[in-house]
Length: 276
Image (cartoon, rainbow, N blue to C red; front, side, top):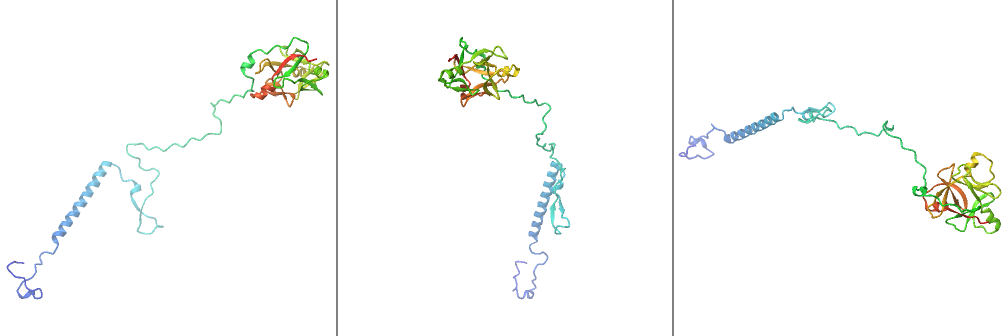
């Protein structure tokens, strides 16, 4: 509209011959600017996507492609497909599945060596190498306990017990004749006054007549071994190596060796001159 012409009243524009300019719609410049900005934005996005695809060089994984849900899902919804087991590996790295954890087989390995059988406990080497003390040179020998020095081996009712002999008869029952072992001459056998011998039967020491059998000779033969107490010996069975005579409840028995202070004291004896 020309500045020379005055604008007529709005209620009667036709009276002065003036009419509004309808050759250009209002806001055209703004629409052009908005359109140009949108086109530039779209172009920049397409360019960035093209550059990223050209750098990666790999197709879009199937897991990221949208797919329509099955007929069981509501229509019009879009979901992502479940990735398959054989998916695309990472570029530059070889895909490897983790190896399963090895399980222990119940059957033994052919290279495994069987465990050696356990050996029976034996007295310490120091005790077995030293020589036992010599018994007295007299004909009679009495056997005295180490931890009960007032008690001796004594025959009572056919068994050998640990007692304190008082009468002459008791002292006679507590005196034996030490002879060469019936089954091993380097060991000892103990003869009684009536011609019998001390032998173990059912692992209990008793006085019995010699029946001349090989078993009786072995049961009546005991080998002296050094004890942990000075001047004392331990008496080991010939036919049951590792078992020694010891007193328990004041009765003489044959029991396996134990690494125990009480056992060592109960199985240690001193061979002294006869009491009769």
